[in-house]
Amino acid sequence: MKTKYTEIEVLPTARINSDSEIIVSIIRKKMPIKEDIDKITTQKEASSYWNQYPFTELLRRSKFFELREYVFEVLTKIKEICPDKYDKIHKGNPYYWLGMTSYLLKDYQSATYFMAASVKEDLEIFDECPSKDFIQLKGSSERQAAKRLVEEAESILKQFTDLYNELPQIKKEKIFPEIEVKDIRDSFLKKATDKRIKKYHSETSAFISFFLEHGKLLTQLSIVETPLSKEIILLNLIKGCILLESLLKAITKFSQSEQYVTKKDKSKIKKTFTLIDYLNKNRSKLGIQNGLTLRAETLEEALNLLPVQRDDFNNIFSFVGKIRNTIGHSIGWDIEINTQIYNETFELITLSCIHVINTLYR
Image 1 (cartoon, rainbow, N blue to C red):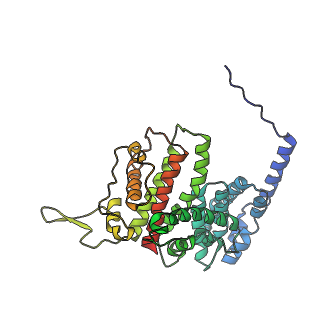
Image 2: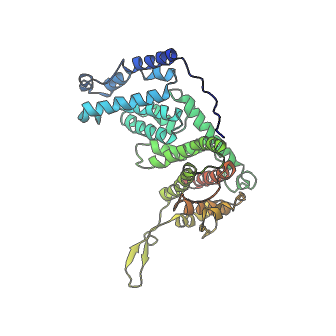
Image 3: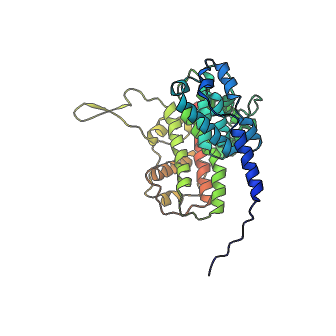
């Protein structure tokens, strides 16, 4: 039996051509010319130069893909015709547009990548800038074109801090303090926008893109309920696990004696630390026992532990460790992944990351 397909309504050619012609005419209003670029010697001149491009006009028409491709084309052209000048020109403006359009296209990794690049450019000149508000998830700031996007991202993170604050150890037993988005901003996100601190850039970007990807992936899983390829789901989960380990590694200091192992011949070799070492070192503050079991033979064995009891951080960190040590070695597991399994696993990884920030960074 032949599959019947519903006929797709085709837009009138005249309408398609009209819209396309408008976009082309907007883009062709301004393209890089070497003479114009050679005139740029200051940041003020660079700002004036970027403002000549019709980026805003394309954004108003919701042409996010076209706008992003246009900015890519402009930057590529400038690098081609003025390679020496490209590195010297202030590019905070176009990087910000790339970050905005990537977010609107739900390409969250690229969004944080370009916003971080914009921060780097702008903080060389300014103390405050819109991209800084994005990385800090500061939706209350008025001076940002991406204000609506930042408010949205901030509200998504709040859903997970609310989930964390509902844990018995926080809400009932009050063993650990509650945490809000502002606390994560002040203790963690701001580190990536502080000119005096030369790290945390990748960790903050990964943290933001990780939780933003959650909704998109849930939608995709609801459409394809039993996916043949689990790549995007498993890569998102392992990203969260690597983020957890990175958060621990960035804040943990081992003594000189802890960093070396003495061999039988009395010689010393530098120790390679793993997730269990970072957890053991911080076990008191994290409220977990020494030597958690993080080993699982298969991903199926780890996922069979769901649902994990959330009233004990030993359970949470042990489960996340098992996920890290299985997906970290293969994404080829023959397992069933659905929205419930993904959502529960994602939440446990997110809770562990937030707990590390709450106990070690504040």
